[in-house]
Image 1 (cartoon, rainbow, N blue to C red):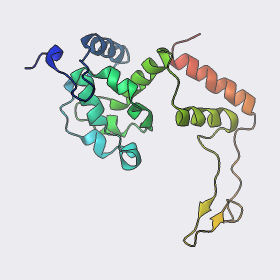
Image 2: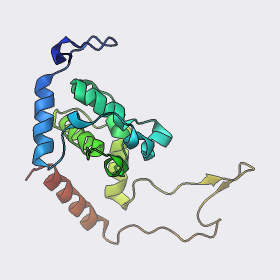
Image 3: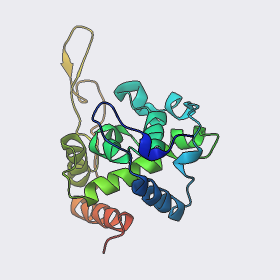
Length: 182
């Protein structure tokens, strides 16, 4: 068995951090989740991943890097932000490991370190606060490249929350509670 300190990422010459692995395992244990170390790379999580289809997220690769101790490299990449949180990876895992929860913990570490949230993710959060949806309505193109909005297609207008200020307050409170703040 290879000792973790003898591994080197040849792309950026980084070394794994065993303290990060212990910290991650501790946080997952508090959440009642299994350690990434029991993942045996069957790729069932990736085969059901919604983000894999569009954004090429590979949850099994995130788990492999996590097991190897390259947690900081995962945090510094934008790969964790492509997860859509559908939980299919958790449902499919024969070892009951939860790649989605690992990525949530790593996102929390990223934010707690004071780094700015990636722009697209920040836009999505702002849209949710202001109108209750992850993205606004947009026009679509038909096969002849003509633009259509919901009205021209005979679709009803999408209505957001009735009281956007109250919705934003509740959403913000839930986020603070989730992150363990006051």
